Length: 193
Image (cartoon, rainbow, N blue to C red; front, side):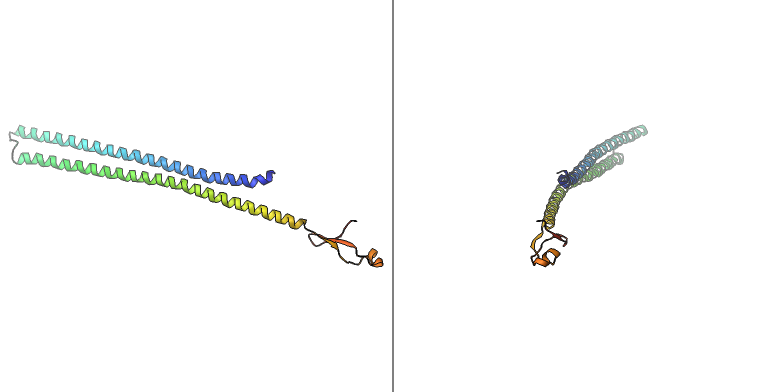
């Protein structure tokens, strides 16, 4: 009885191993996706911090320029005003580029996270299909093995019985046939009376 259950237990373990592998891969990919999502969030925050620092630096520099002009006795008009305006404009472009670069990096990280979640989902689905395939193949193999074992048992148990005319010492004098039995491996043996 225990020997009959052994192939089923082995098949169950194989199927469980396949499913567990898919679940572990899914879990690993989801963890990596969470890391990418967090890195994307931090990248956007870093971009905003860099933009804020650039704006602070620009205001400080504009203040220093205005103070230097006032200290030298020049008025804030004409080319001096244009210089401060141009500097502010350049810093705004720099801020725009910082934000654009960081948001692009964040989008790449978010796409990577999305791809990892998809890979995890695919690993889980693939493990399910593989487990079903393994189970069906194993059940078919077990069934085929049982059918072959039953066929072999029938063949081993099959014997030809009947009277075959073979000369023997007892029957040679009387002319009566002696009962013999033909076994599985072709060995003739005398049938007990």
